[in-house]
Structures are given as structure tokens and as C-alpha cells.
Length: 404
Ligand code: SF4
Image (cartoon, rainbow, N blue to C red):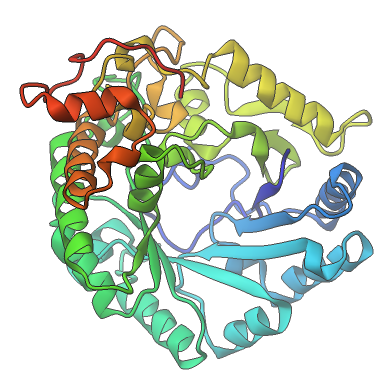
């Protein structure tokens, strides 16, 4: 059941991050903001779709969503009262943090909006990867935003895009030093078809998977060394849940629950998870945009849900790709994000582009859980068997075929 809508509220940003899939030289209709009519149509269709006791989340995203301003945002939030009871919905906003000040903090508190910030690491790296339009770094602005959140006793949740040139151990230590409560490490968005593809630009053509692997291993090491209560790291926590067969719905940790959320573009188009957007952007296929719009006369969320379920089934995204079926850590990795499996043949029946990094991370997670005495609870009997065979340390060493 769809229970989350990521709302692309603004096609504009005050930063120019080189890895951004949304704001770049090709951004069409730059500056477009989502309209009240489009938001109203979304709310209407969600309210038609929701069962009485079901909850729903709205994630305000961009571009930079704070560029829509408080007055416009307040109108969008107030409109929710016409469609939902307050305990039925939750609002979260993901921001680059540059515009956060006390009036915005007061606004979030008065309107029950949870906030997530983007911070890529220590100043030198963050400023290089997340410059303002002027070219000046944005690190100090984000640190000020974090201080304001602390001062107002709010949760500090951070998304951090992994840079293979960084030391993951120090990166996590840095976030801990800033008093971050929860974080997640996002691997730069890519898929197999982009790697080595000379039509996609240098940034997406060559992803430094060795560096990313080292980063994740360093961050994981720091994480396990940290005494309780630990900073939450969603990727690590969800991969560990995979080991025990606990579902979490997190696509970056190999969930295939694409039919539980949607992306609403500023013009009302309905799209898949944003990690599929590069496929459309580089004319490798037509996957991201579902060619459905909330303003269409016969639009319904049930149709969207069915379309998403059909997509999962036709592309076999709920099954492990053949390449992964004999991998030792398949029940930890689950072939990572479904979009990362896409290759130039137009299919998803391939190991993830992130394989190198996730294989290494999967191995140390297995070792860690084994040392903790938890491996007897692994849900995958093949993984237990592999642990007993010291010689098995590469993919394709086991033989069973298993659906994720
Ligand atoms: S580590 Fe690689 S081969 Fe193993 S499940 Fe993940 S993507 Fe597939």
C-alpha cells in the first residue's frame, strides 16, 4: 500500500552539487514551484486511497524546499486539515540547511515538521561537493543549522553522500562530534549502464567503488567501536536486519518495496523512486516517469500502485538477479537498490553497480554478527553453512537460488 509521497516542491536550489540528479545544466523549467492545485489533487487522491486507520507521510523535497517560503508552505500544510486527521499524517522536510534560521525552526515546531539536513563531511570536502551558486562553500551554514536544532532540542538527522576520497571512520566521527542523532550514508546514485558510458559525463561514468568500499568499511568500524547509545546509521542497521530476515522497506539496503511510495514532480507527474531518474535522464530507457499525472481525469492512487506492482513483477525486482544467486552475502545485500542493477540491455537482471562495496560491507557485517554470537539466527541457512567453510570468501561460492 502506498504510504509515502516525496514531493518535489521546487525545481530550484541555492546550491550546485556536482552529483545532483535534479538541479543541473539540463534542468527543465528551472524555478518551477508546485502549485496549490497540484498539492490539493495529491491530498484528494491520498485521502481516497487511505484506509481509516492508515498513516501517510509527506516528504517535502526539491531542489531546496525552503525556497518555497513559509507562507506558501503554511498554505500547503493547512490544506491537509481538509483531508486528514492530524494523527493520520506526518511531514518531513529534507533541506540543504543553508536557509534555516530561528523563524524556520519555530515554523517546523509549530507545524510538526521533522527536518533532515544534508552534510557531506568535514568542511573542506563538504564545501567542494556542496557549493552555493556563488561557488562559496555551505559547510558553515549547515553547522549553524545543526546548532539551532540543538538549541531548540530537536532531532538532528543527516544525509551524507559518500565520497570515495574520504575516510569513512573520520566522517562518522565528524558527525558524532557535531551531535548528530541519526545519519545515513548515500552511495552516489548510479547503475551498471552508466559505468564506462562516455555519453553520461565524467562524474557518472567512473564511480570510485574501491574508495566507496573503503569508506563504508571505515564508517562501519567506527560505528561498532562507538559505545551505546550509538548514532543511528540507517544503511548499517537495515543490512543487519536483512541478515535476520527482518523487513525494513529501505531500497538502498535491497528492499524492493517500490509500490509503497511515489515521487510527485512539480508539474503533477508521478514517478518512481529518484534512483531511477538517471535512466530517463541519459535516454537509457523510460523508467522514472510513470506517465501518470494527478491532474488526469481518471487518475487514482490504486492505479499507481498497480502500475508499480506490475513493474516490480515484470522486471523481477523482487527476485535476486542471476548474478547474485550464488553470492555469499546475498541475504545481507539483497542486490542493493533495485535501480542500481539496471544495465545497458535494459534489464535489471544484473548484480548491483555497488557490488564491490556491498560485498565487502556484507562480509564484515557477517563477521561482526558472528563474533557477537548472533549467526545462529541468520535466516539464510546457506549463509550459516558458508560460515563453517573457511575457504568460501568470494561471490559464487554457494549454490542455492533464493528470492529476496
Ligand atoms: S554483493 Fe554483489 S553479487 Fe552479492 S548480492 Fe550484492 S550485488 Fe549481488
